[in-house]
Image (tube, rainbow, N blue to C red; front, side, top):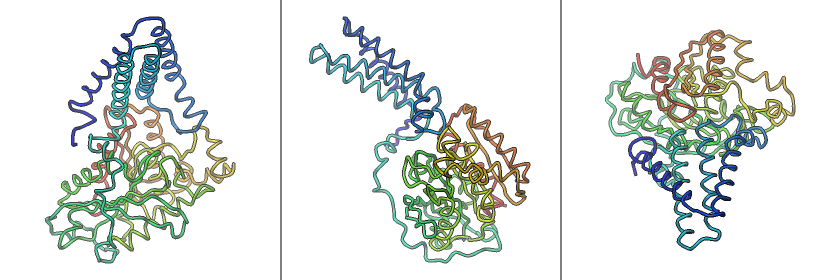
Length: 427
């Protein structure tokens, strides 16, 4: 179950089987086969040319276009499916079976290559157990110690070593003030937290991409492994990490704002910190707290840092956007979330706040993949504005990565090293 779906032997094997499947679909002869081929090529070409327009501009399913390589594989899948359907008409029973088997091979190969790009399911086990909650532990009232605002950082109080292992637990975080209902949070507790003489640790709040949710940080984000590597690099110290849900569902989008959609900003800035302090026994000194995220979550991180620097004075923006969005059409975003009040929307966006206010006490880490040009432009624009607003900023371009989970895999550990002194996990 630990077989990699990203690298190693399985993806090229699936790709080879997909090629065999495509050849099997093309092996049929006759007029029916020719008609199916023409339709397959036509529909694959239409998919390639029109998928992003349909998903982004017409249906508003995505705020940003899918990468070209992903669109290519969707088009291949469409073409293979059309060829397979053509093989079901006017053919023998044996040929029908061959068409179905070959179609499955093509679809699996296309899905595998799309997963290689996004790195949504790192291993076969992650794919097969994606919706299985059997391994989840429910938080039972924290560890019995009250949260305290510490005068000194954890690194000055910690003698170590960390014994035992880290754990992942889950717990609902109620929207007491906001009225918002998010899905249960996923919480990383370092080995040091679970030990006999635990230090009082700082907090990292994380948000996943959209579509998506907290579970994505556990599977695609490999959160436990990443944070264990952070702890190993800092003498056993790592922040208690709480992955929260500001959306409520995979396809919902609150933009991490208080709007007519929901009071997601209040949830993240009030309800979440209050719950963490009441339940996790952590360092409530907010100067050591951080907020981070990937993609949609990265946009959310810079929003929290600019709107609530007293709560989240440290942030990690991994491949975030220029500003929050429901649609590629900015006018539609403003209409849906703010009843068309552009001034109300603009007043809450990071670039507006960075141009208006000074943030000398805020530190931020930006990253993006070298292959995501649009996101790279946004990262440059926002990080430059952050520096000009007085923030201490570091940026990272992850080589060979597009808009995939490979970006947070490569950038979250160095981001926490950059913020480590601020958060009190290193000197």
